[in-house]
Length: 231
Image (cartoon, rainbow, N blue to C red; front, top):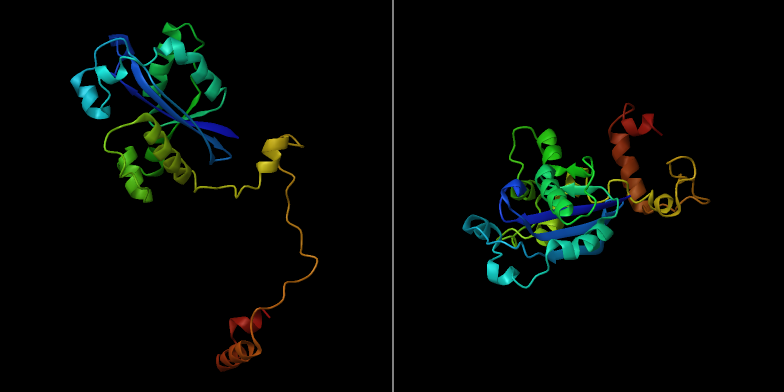
């Protein structure tokens, strides 16, 4: 399964008030593992940057002036995400801005159910606990020391690690469905992988001395020792 972990930076909180996206960062996952493919783009918002927003991400007017406008990069963005589910922290915010920009530029907008919201997952999993990206990094021991300011690509890379922890670790399915995902399911969505016994039993790793010592230990426990009951 392909997923895209995504983050944006903007000039403010509401596209309806004229605010725009200034940066998009995204990381590709396949079967919950990073593939190494990323998408990163700075965008000229065609408006002045408010001081409050600049203090969050550090992207100013001079830096963004020669960057492409959203209409010039919209198709490349859509080509990268394709129809994969998006993994976003506080998804309503980013999807609202992405759909505003896509609509203004004449591109198809994203589906209402396009995103997995890690903020909601965190709040459900840890009720009452702080659920910001920084708080979740502290909870899971994820290094976010490079995050002096918000940055879309860095934040999406950190969010990918947080997401994998939220759903049970870096490889929750142990990779057993990779072949099925690549070649296609053979029976309506389940993998054909199964465990088989070894043709030959692995040789024991205990020495004769260790075996004798263990037997002497068990003898000292009496007839009710659990090792004797399971022998």
